[in-house]
Length: 511
Image 1 (cartoon, helix red, strand yellow):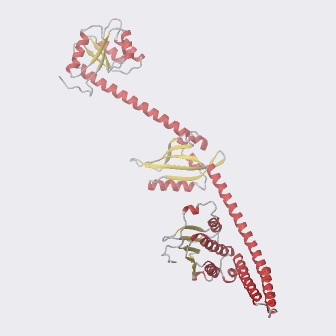
Image 2: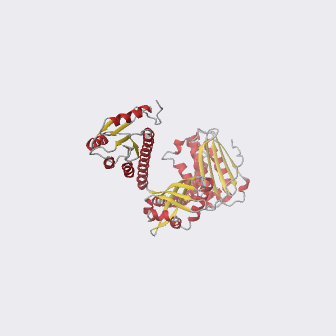
Image 3: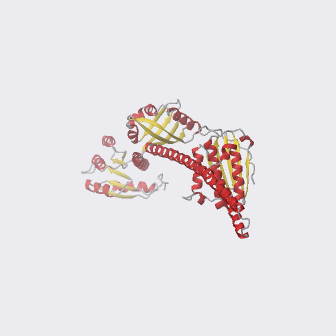
């Protein structure tokens, strides 16, 4: 017994034959070749139709010359049922013309009944080819389904899916664009695939160089492309985002697969938020200005009117006490206590007036004002506090609003430390670095937590951040490296002018 050439030795054969001798010879040939055939014999058209419609067959072997059922009729029946099966005709010797007609009509092979040596090899060949055709149809069906799913998905995405190819000669061409191109650009798919220049010409003239540069960089580094810019579409300006990944081919081509999305609405919202932020910033600056004016008025009233009244009261009290030489000792002590309270009141009024409107800031400058504030803080709270200022600040004339903002920030920070930090040591450092004013405040207290900064009523930090933002500066606050809290800010000497970033240098430790 031979070894079958097909992987599966079992074959399901449909034998179309009106006699008994022919099918037996055919089956015996397959058994000798090592196969285990299962078979069924039919002898008329009705039985053939029923067998083809209800069972699966590997091959149909049709004898020529069956009364009422010719090989050509059997072939037509298979076509009607849309079956692709190996169909081999077995004809008597001398029926060459009939064999030729069968072959022309679609039979896969014709064999002489007296010479069946080619039967098994012919069936093996045709079965392999039929199975290959079936696999190909299945693959094509899967490919069709996959393409259909992809096109459905692409057509429902909010944008245009694309494949852009840069050929080895530098020419750019869209190999595929989804239906979203019509909504974005007003063109049909074949318009863009026919000429990619339509797309590049639609890009705003100011943004076009940026797109070309981004594409060139993506091609050079084989890096993802993520670009935002404007296009002109239907006499309107739209914002788009292009996101794609490049892929190089062995032929020297570069393929970008990606999506173009309409981000006009997002850009509009972004613009509205920016304008709202600018308006809030302007309102905040206005309120700060109004607050400073009110502070100046109150400080002036305290200094001029309340201070004068307290001085007058003290003088009158001193005169009154001098006219009581024979008064009881308790009464003199009362007069002395009143004078002491008046001294405290005058000191408090003077301190409040200075805090409301620090005259030292105008007379001696920011460094001296901060030193004075630090000394006053240490005296009032008992917390050790020292200030360090840079000699490079000498002769630097800051705008009044910049000096005042930095002074208020120091005030606010020291107030927060006194209330919440439980610190025993505070250090304030004011320096000048490459056109920037840098202020650092550290303490050795309990430290600040992320939850503290996220509190909805942390108005102190919000106020500091808003002041810095209005001056075009940077602000950060975090837990210190060795405990406590570290507040750092950097603002340009002249707000509105971008200063160069400071060079990295070892930071001097404050404590």
